[in-house]
Length: 321
Image 1 (cartoon, rainbow, N blue to C red):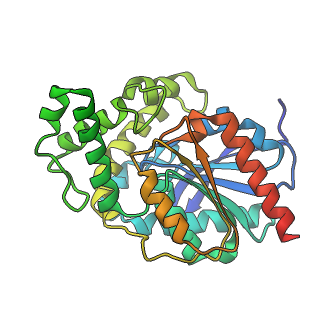
Image 2 (cartoon, one colour; image 1 turned 30 degrees about the vertical axis):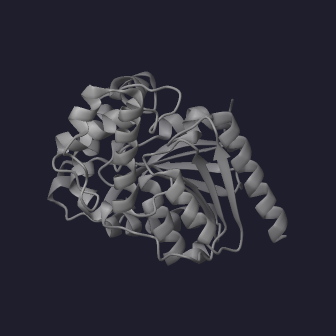
Image 3 (tube, rainbow, N blue to C red; image 1 turned 45 degrees about the horizontal axis):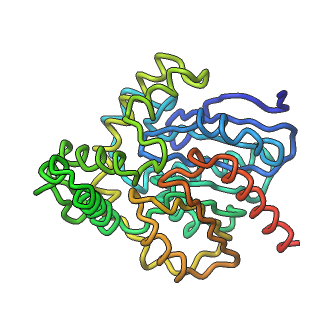
């Protein structure tokens, strides 16, 4: 397929050079900005591969955040980072895109850590956001991690997995914080093994993350090395700040919200996300459930995700006319 716009470029965001990837079938389309998870887990290769049909109706923009993927710089470890750093960066990226494409508002699509940023943006600058598509919805760091850990214990008990129970014993998070990095990796490994991360394809880190990077043309080998460094560093540097976040008190958004949530998600547990959504007041809201997905329906059920999101955004446009 030929695209009128198909390029990668660096933009200056709060003094930092950051890379964005743009694709659209024709000029003048509304813009959708994908805010990836992690922190540091860029997903442009998955988004562009699995959701290429969206380029017919939208100018797709994938942004490698500060210290992530193509935006990784060695000096990231000297910077003082916080959730606010990334929300500030995201608002600048929105402003850059608004000016670049001559649009008052753009759509933002946040995934997991991307919803930590996305919800904050929806509260801070609703006048710049046409709609907020949220997936793997983060609500409260401490509650999320407690329920995620408890899911692993419940599944280990149900399956009679004595090895898992032994390894999980004594590493429960306190206020969202695990006793050590090793303890957190044990929990995340069992989360994946038991289907709370990815529901059908329960693969390890190599198959799920590294192998797709090695196969894609979006990242070179040197990019992949930077990707790995950024992802490992940022998750540690930002973790305490992330799990301290809570959006329980956010009961009103001034932007339309579309939630795309996997029914089996225990990374950002769906029951917690649903309670938040049900109590939320917004000018337009739609919950789209994915029965065969856990944390990432955009990749686990890609055809349905693209179709449902495009349909919801068209419905929203018709309502606003």
